[in-house]
Image (cartoon, rainbow over all chains, first blue to last red; front, top):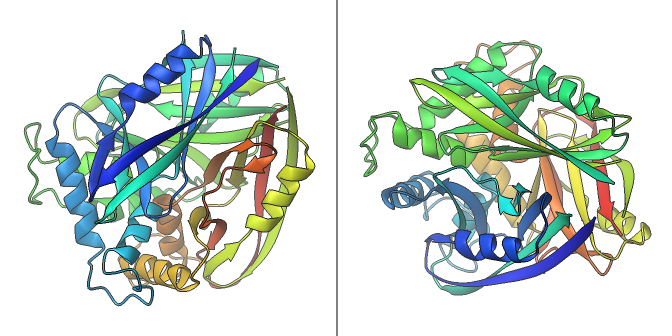
Length: 138
Length: 138
Length: 138
């Protein structure tokens, strides 16, 4: 049994879903573990992780609209020093995932046919986002 | 230290919560690991996983109503090719869990007294849902 | 490769976020594992786990307000035997996390600069909350 560690860095440019499936799959495959467990952990509280359909890009746009709709920018927030997109970002982060854990079989992630791994960016400005990856298996 | 893998298949028949606690507990117990970590991963984006109270069935019905209420079927969705239950299903999936990780002690899941493991089905039609299970421990 | 187990007990006194970052970090560090995976699992369905900004306490208050707002106490709930805070608590729990999995490097959690680990209490009365911790690594 052994472990592997890596950090994925993604530059985001405004709100939306940024797919990282290919780079995560590639890194996992290169670790040459047959059976294993992958954990992805995003080191932020205003961007998050989600697994969604990656066939029709409209799904990502509709998701973004939904989360925008339930966390209005002009809400009665105490925490607003960094701008109107700040507190809504924290709420969207709490409603989605800070981490994802996915089993591997035969060196491959057990993602379903239509599942893609996304960074969900909630802030307006350009950001560099870090996702810590940890693999344990053999 | 060793690993065990399995896939649970559940047939769902319309929206609602389908409990899989007993079959998951049984499979874990049969792997004869004393201390271990279980991961459940659902391979879909229109059904999800959740842990909820399994004492009063009304909790599941109220949960279903809540999620139905915040994701109206007649919303302004771009992605609607598969029907009015399609995009709401993806949103409900994003708001709940695609995976659950639960420690085992003395060969048993450390679920609390009232906690049950559920597949949360969001689509109207009959579906066959796959949940990948991974156990690591000794 | 080895494992370590612990249970954290926190007394809560009404709705809100209770930070447990320091005690979790300390326990992990004491296990003297260099690279490892931590899982925290809360054994309840009316309190949950979340990772949020721990710099400005207003973030926690705004989060609490948001969740209070989307799960009104006077909703049309079937499950109301334990009071008006009961079913909203289950919904808030479903919308946040029952478990968190976080990698460790150099014996330390890979939390981002502003990330804190919180128990999110959803009930009005005083409760004792149990969080199961599991560490695997070497």
